[in-house]
Image (cartoon, rainbow, N blue to C red; front, side):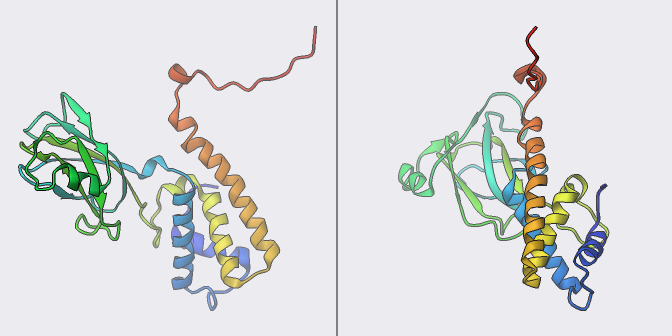
Length: 233
């Protein structure tokens, strides 16, 4: 199966369930597809969701907006460079709770190159002002360049567009949608069980690629080998 668009996926859901558009309206189908995409995102880490963004810290400013659409931060690097270039010496900030940072510099009087960071607020939207914030300590004493590594929610399927899941995991996406569909229809239970099992089978293959093959290389980890028993000579 090649990649599928949202409109194709809607047609497939109706064909597989043999339910007409009178029941499965566009609004309902879009909700089922969104639920399926979110389930996949939570079930397996996807490299396509990993992003990074560069900027500069501001002298005397402790808190910053997380990047637009940020779901969670994987790490923050702070460079010694103060001209915005992401090169040269750098260090990874240690993540701590916001309360730790407040105790560490209770009056924001400790300045220097940041050593810690903490998150607060939630990933509530797509803009940088609604996707949470992070704070650093000590408070920057220079315009240090930094790079933030984070994960985002994939672009949702709408109309004729595609995304990484629909192009690279179409079978799993379809089965996840059918699980949502039969849950909405409240049965038959055997069909819901069938597609739940099919989804899990496809998920294992997809996960083996995302957190297996894509996280290793032949030089570092060696070539993947399958032991085969040989009959005694």
